[in-house]
Structure formats: C-alpha cells, structure tokens
Image (cartoon, rainbow, N blue to C red):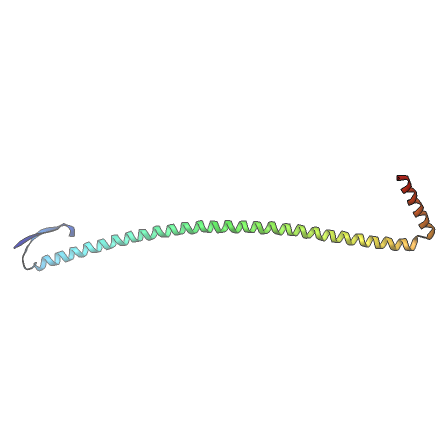
Length: 142
C-alpha cells in the first residue's frame, strides 16, 4: 500500500511516496531536519512574542510606577503644606501668648514702680489734695 505525504508544513518538501511498513532513512532524516528547523523557528517566534509581552508589561509597570510616584509626591507636598500652615498658626498663637505675658508683666512692673514712687514721694497733704480734686471731678460729672 502506498500513501502520499505532503510536507509543505515542514519547509516545502516534495511529496514522497511511502510504502507500507516504513520510510526510507533519507526521507526520515529529511523530515527530522525540517521538523527541527520548523520547531526552532516556532520557538524563536514564541520567544520573540514573549519578549514583546514582557516589554509591554515592563512598560506598563513603569508607567504605573511613575503615576504612583506622582501621586505620592503630590500627597507629600500637600502634607508638607498642611504641616507648614499648622506650624505658622502655632507660631502665631505662641507669639501672641508671649506678647500678652510680656505686656502683663510690664504693667505689673510699672504699677509696682509707681506705687513705690507714690509711697516715697507723696505726703499726707498731697493725698488730701488728690482726693479733693477727684471728688470735685466726680461732682462735676454728676
């Protein structure tokens, strides 16, 4: 029994006539060689496709990483801005508190100095004059 084998898929080999029971050695070697070439070509093409896919994935990951980096930097900048504003508010409040304390201390010191001077310099006659003048001023307002 004879069969016709078309080896176009293996690099365009001519059709061979095969007798039942086996192939001739040259034909087998020819088919094996062409099949090897075909498989190597297919493997290289598959590797090239995988390389392309890997390159696409890497590019997508880089793009995503850059976007994430941008989001992180923007969030950090906003957080820094908020911290700076809070620091400025705290600084202003602290400065106001210190100014009020200094003014209060200055007033206390001035009153104490004035009392001392009045005790040392004002006589009983001066006190009576001050009280009388104050009383006249009150009467004049009423």
